[in-house]
Image: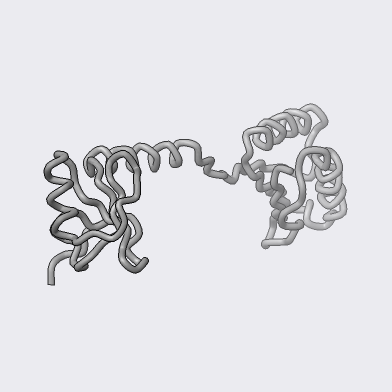
Length: 171
């Protein structure tokens, strides 16, 4: 069995006896014998390309297949270029963070949200800080309140050993 190729069938690959033909100007020629349609395409110096293979009879168009493939390739590249990959940025905090340090982290977080990225906040407890987890909880509540204007909580704070993890996504 031959290797299945990607894209529509062209010229001699079209196995149907008759096809619905659309010429290079885009006018519908009606149902035509496939051999005659291929001959018309060759005379025009173009290819017979199957557009709608599942209809009965299949719809074929006389066009420059190389140019058609190139346009499709360009369209796919353009779509890939416009795509935004959402990254998860991580901000690490400690329960006893100072005001200025906190403000710097908040500015960074705001920048991440403006770029359309998600932010994972990791609050790590060390040593005796584990005995005063309410300080960390207050800090996370403060973060939630401060970013509520431009971000929403995607995953609420949860414990993972000595750290608390929370994920925020831009609104």
